[in-house]
Length: 594
Image 1: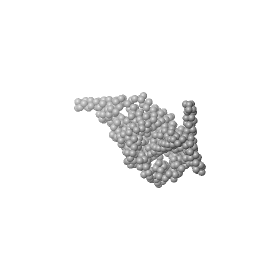
Image 2: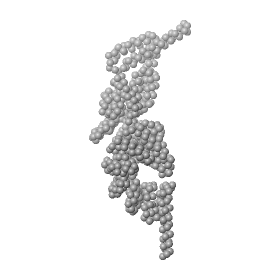
Image 3: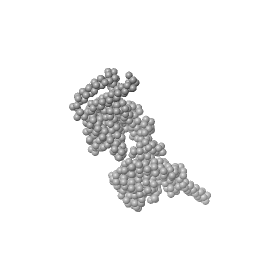
Image 4: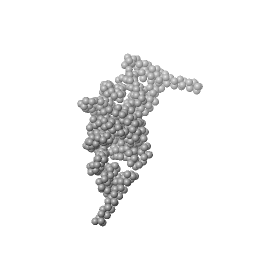
C-alpha cells in the first residue's frame, strides 16, 4: 500500500475518532441535564449512548475502543477531582481566586463539562457577593452591573441544576447584599432543604440572622436573632471543625456585636491555628487588640497580615490608625496613602487619610513650616472630597471637611459642608456643631447661639457646644450667659477637651479682671497637658499682671522651649526678666536710701 493511501486512511480514522469524541461528549452532557423536562427521555438517551458506544467499538476496533474508554474515564476522573478541590478551596479555604484558577485548568481538559461550568458560575457569583458585602459605601454603577451578572448566574444555576443547593445559597447571599434578609432566609432555608447538613449553607444562614439582628429595632428581637446566628455558626463549625472562616465570623460577632474583644481574640487565634497564613484573621486580631488598647500588639498583627497579603487595604488603614493613635502622624499618613492606592474605592481609607493629614498639618504648623502645612491640609481636603465622591450623603465626611475649610479660612465652602451635614443627619449634634462653628467664625453670633442650642438639645453633655456658645454670648455682650456656659463646659468636659476648656475659661476670667481664678485655670490646663504652649503663655501674662515677674519669666521660658521660634514668647520672657531686674534694682536703691 502506498504512503499516500496510508496517510488518507489514518486521516479518515482520526476524523472518525474526533467525531465520536464530540458525539459522546454531547450525549454525556445531555444525560446529566437535571431539568425535570428531560426526565422522561433519560432511558432513551441511555440506549442511544449504548448504541453509539457499540458502533464505536466496530469502527475503531477492540484496542482503540478500550483506549478511548480509558482516556475518557481518566479525563472525567481528573476533572471531577479538580471540581471537588475547587469547591473546597472556596467553601473551606475561602479562596475564590485559587478555586477559579483550578476550574480554568479543568475547563482546558473538558470545555463542555457541566460540573465545571456550574461551579465556575457559582464561585464567580459568590466572589461578587463577598466584594459587595464588604463595601463601606453605596453601590456604584459598576457594582450594580456586577450584582446583575451574579444574579444572572444564580438564575442559570437554578434552571440547570435545581437539585443543587448552590443556586439557593447564591441567591440568598445576593438578597442579603441587597438589604433583604427576610428573602435571604427563604433562599437559605431552601438550600438546607436540598442538602441538609451543608456546613457552608448553615454558616451563611447564620449570617442572615446576624443581618436580621442588626436591622431589628426591638431589643428582644435583636437578642433572639443574634442568638440564632451564633447557634447556626456553632452548628456549622460542628459540621466542619476546620472552618477557619466560621471561626472568623464568630470572632467578628464577639468583637462587633458583643463588644467582647477577649472572646473575639480566642476565636481569631483558633482560626490562625488552623491556617497560620490566614491574613484576614491576623487583621481581626489587630482590631481586637485595638479595642483592648494594646496598640503594639495591634501593630504587630497588622504587619503580619500585610506580610501575607500586601494588598490588604483594611490592614494598611489599621496601621495608619495605630500610628495616628500614638501621635506618629507622619508614619500613619504614609500608610493611609498606601491604603488609598491599593483600593481607591474604599471610603474608610480616604477618611483615614484625611484625618491623619489634618493632624500632621497641625504638627507642622507648630514648627512654622507654612508651605508644608498648606500642602498637607490641601491633601486632607482632597481626601475627604474623594470620600464624598464615593458616598455623597455621608454627614461625617462633610463635618470633617467643613472644619478643614474653616481652618483654611474658606468660610463659604465650610458653611456649605456644614449645611449638607445637617441636611443628611438632622439629628446628629456634630452636624449642628459644625454649622454653629462656621456661623461663629463668620461673626453671626446670634445664629451660632441658636445652632449651639440645637446641639445641646440633642446632647446635653456636649462640652464643645457649651464652649462655643459661651464665646458667642460673650461676643454679644451677654456676660452672665457666657459665664454660665463656661461653667457647664467645665462640668461636662471630656478628657480630650478639658485642657482647652480650662484655657478658654481662664482667658474669659482674665478679661473680666478675675486674675487669681484665671491663673488657677491656666495652671490646671498646662498640668493636664504639659506641652500646651498657649496655657504657659497665658500664665506668664497673668503672672506679670500680678507683679510676679520672676514666675512670669519662668512661664514664658517654658512656652519658648515648646516653640523656640515664637517671637511672642521671647518678648514676654524679655519683658518679665526686665521687670524683674528693674524691681530688683529698685529694691536695692530703696535699701541704700534707708
